Length: 341
Image (tube, rainbow, N blue to C red; front, top):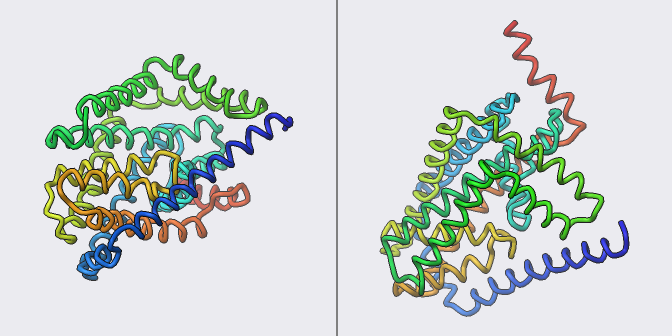
């Protein structure tokens, strides 16, 4: 690596660490600025039965999303056992939590590379998986805002612009991939060392070609699975809002959750810590709720993340992700094929 490239890399790393530190500092500042004991007392209302119900729903959601990812990969010509796709997806959730912008979620691609896929083809399933979630998150959040105008100034204009940009990028991926390729190539040339640019170009070309593997049947299945997963995801936070006696409408819960999750996807802090609380405090203040209520509700995100990361860590420690595990993976997954013959 040349000196200028190394300096650029170090500056980027320093900026990421600084942003994460600021997010944590913001979180601590918010905690010391409110009546923390009041926020924590609200959580004490959650019973063991209700906690187990939430955990069960989280497992079901991850199973659905793992099945969706498995369906995408199957369209590429690679079959993955159902339980293994579940383990891989959970491990990705854990790594996504500890990395900015949840980029660790792409660990599933390593498994596919070890199965013999090229990098571009392996990244495609995780990319489509993430893109589907972002589209539905923006769309559902936008619809919920229509039922609660006046939350912030120029609300309809700003939210409509976000929706248009999201849909435009999605359409470009499917129909104008040449434009998307040029934009990503220019961005990569700016942020990546020159020796990685050509590799990124190859991976990008391979990934975009995989959109041709989608047919109408699999696309409909992916959409339905995404809808089901998000329905259950919002249901969990509706349950939390009820348990915390927030007395807010379903649309406010959906709008708040959408904003909080969308914020956590931006590579500013660790899983949105600090910035998520700030967004919720702003939204809740607009409907007459206290900062303590907002922070109490934000703790539900932390609890959900803790449960998912705990299960995901176990899957990460026990799951096969490395090249050294490839032989055992291949032998294990070919055994049913031999028995069927």
